[in-house]
Length: 134
Image (cartoon, rainbow, N blue to C red; front, side):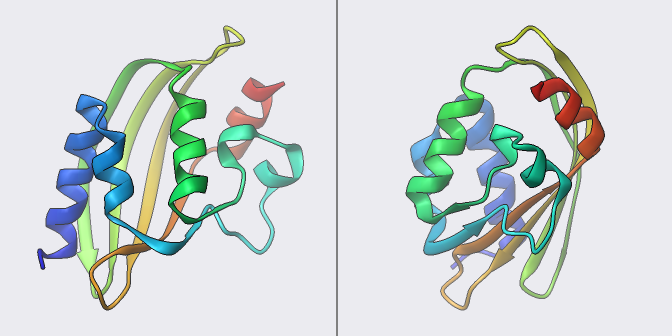
């Protein structure tokens, strides 16, 4: 089993080459994708911030963002502590509706005892994403 930080490095590399199957293989069967007790982007219906369950739910997320045009996806730093890993990422994307979003995001990953990612959240500027989704 690799260290969680190494797993996230390989996940980001897989995203860069479009290898979504590899990413899905790193996920726990019960992964909580964008699970928040109360989140403004959920309430506003931002499609890419929708709460999802399991690898099938994560795949729905990747299918949705496949329609984005990525101008920038820059992993700036990866930090780890215990069973959690944080990725700092700068993005610049154009959405299918023509709106462009430039943001600095934090990606939070949690690992289970088997070394699988069992939770994932984007921390981002919700107001930007809510406006862009309209």
